[in-house]
Length: 439
Image 1 (tube, rainbow, N blue to C red):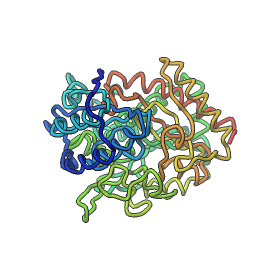
Image 2 (image 1 turned 90 degrees about the horizontal axis):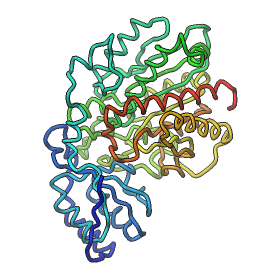
Image 3 (image 1 turned 60 degrees about the horizontal axis):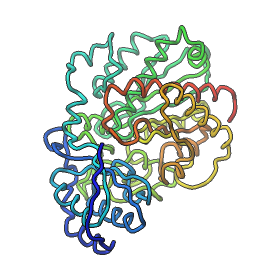
Image 4 (image 1 turned 45 degrees about the vertical axis):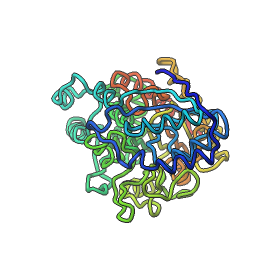
């Protein structure tokens, strides 16, 4: 990671926007794929130091439809907070001088994204990833591999695992969920866990798989795990956005949304974390189908969201916690996302979050910020976490896993184990807190 100080004459926001308007073809939509198109693409970080710089960046990034990694929308860019943006090679010669002209400092986090992707997967064979009895939890797996793994567990651990589908995706893929727990009584409280709402956040599905592995491997030896699996069911959805995740493996490593089609704009996909029926398409979501935070034509327009919402509604008396795993920021968030307000059971939830991040930090010293999503991250409407809370699930959390931007969505496989190990401590902590009946 290294910084470049960009020097140049000051430019007014109005002139900057005009300059951007002339360069609106710099970043074509869907400009990246897993192939050579990413060669020499860069990831840069900008920290606006004034309201003027904030306005310039918002206008420029919005007009260019850049691939903004953090925050999720140009309108969330604020003074003093970093913005991470992917700069395609064809835009480097124009966008970086533009920042220079505007006298805005930036840091290059990753100088060649294609090389970073190749480094991530170098030196391991396809066979080593797919061997089921010796399944490797310290590498990233394709959708096909994850589904094969789920089928294998369903057969091998039939006393603790039951696999089922809650519906089908836009492209017709099954939406698989694992029900994990000892069938000790007909009715038990439950915890819902989903990963991979946003396709490019690969560490999420890796954690969901890790959680299942830990549960099955330590059930006999860990009293806490035995207690959790005896007293609760866990519904685990390793890949929520199956179409998008598959696409991130085959076409565009940095794809975020679902893959539904919009005929009018010829853009694909909806942000599956802006498509829920809770303050739908309000602040923090976009009405434009080509934007990364597009809320969809109507709430639950995406079959994936509709299927999960239907399942959660049907089981809402049973489900006491909703945990969703994202990346990246190192945060533990709870409601509300869509407004600045205190939830009714704040004391219980705040206590659970505080203890969870302390448990997480105890592993490797990694610090997580925690708090209401609106004030800790940014305001966003139509999120799954807010929807779960509004529908009677008292503990609703969203994890933003490692890191804080050095690797971004390209978290190396060598960091899967420490990330999942520390996150496991937080999840167990929340689950055991739940069993203490503080709601």
